[in-house]
Image (cartoon, rainbow, N blue to C red; front, side):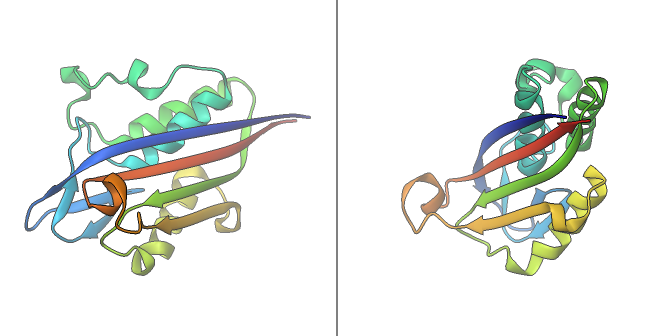
Length: 161
């Protein structure tokens, strides 16, 4: 058995705009903010994709899905995650578990926590018990605390039997 651990990170600028929403693991988070992004801006899927690719020793998602390409404009981030999962399968690995930490001052994510875990379970073909999900604030410090950005960290454990 061979184990691989991967780590991923992403940050996006937050934009205040009435009637907009965040997209976290394909779950719309209603409110008056969204992210500045070339794709659909699903930062959770970006960080997870980076984690999978890093664990495989591959380049980050910006190499495969450049943010200056018309082909990736408004791209659904499920395509990015699907690419990373396919690369993992090609190497003979499967996911054992994932951990995602979302840093966002507002809105509070507690009401969305189970929906996000369910969505991740479906997207990753994992039992919810194998998905760790944390949501933290910036304690009003730094770009997260000042509501200027959202950050997501992700780790994955992959196994080759």
